[in-house]
Length: 267
Image 1 (cartoon, rainbow, N blue to C red):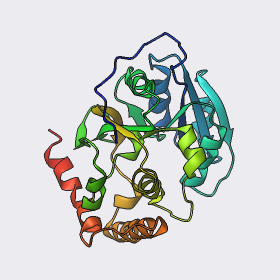
Image 2: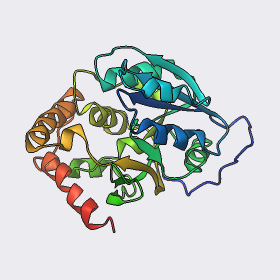
Image 3: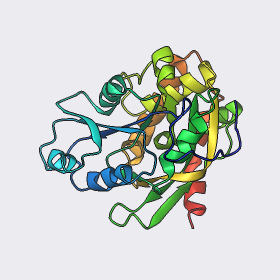
Image 4: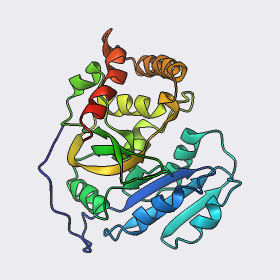
C-alpha cells in the first residue's frame, strides 16, 4: 500500500509521465440524467481525457443527447447483457493509461477532479486510486443526502466491512490486463469482487485522494429493498469465495452497517 501526499497536477502540460485518462459511462434510457454526466466530463480542466459511452440500445433520447457533446471520443449503442458486461466492453475499448467509470446519473464534484486523479498516476508506483463521494438527491444534485468519507486504506479494513466507493476507483489499464475484468457471473457484487481481487488477492498499490470527487445520485440496485440487500449479501460472500479469501464472521454484517455513519455525517 502507498498513500503519497496530495501531488500538484501539471494542468495543461504534457510530459512522459502525464497519463491519458479513459472515462467509461454505461447508459440505458438515461436521458433524464446523462446530460449532467456529460457536462461534468466536458468541463474537466485536464486535457488528456478519452470519454467512452457504452449504451445498451436506449429507446429514449439518450443517444441524441450524447451526440450533442463533441468531447465524447468513442460511443457504441447495442443490446448487452447487463451493466458489468457493458463496463467490460468499455474497458476493452479504452486506450488510456488509467480507467475510471462514471455512471450515467453521476457527475464529478468539480472541474479539477481528473487533474487531481492524473497527478497521482504520474507516480509509476501507483496502481489505483480512490476518494470520497457524496450521495445527492436525484432531482436536486446540490442537496447532499449521505457522505461517504473513505479514509486511508488498510487491507485489514476490508475484513471489517470496509470497501472503497467504486465510482471513485481509478485503475491503471495494465491492472485489468493482468488481473482480469468484472466477473459477470455476479449481478450486483461484481465491483466488490473486482476490488477484493485487486486489493486483497493481488495486493495492488492503492492511494487515497482525501477529497470528494463524485456526486452520486441516491438510489441503487443493491440497496433498493431488504430482499435486494439479502441477495447482495449472498453475492458478497460468493465474491470472497471466488478469490480463495475468507471473511470474518462479522465482515458482511458490518459492510451494510457502515452506511449508518454516512447518513449521520452528511451534514
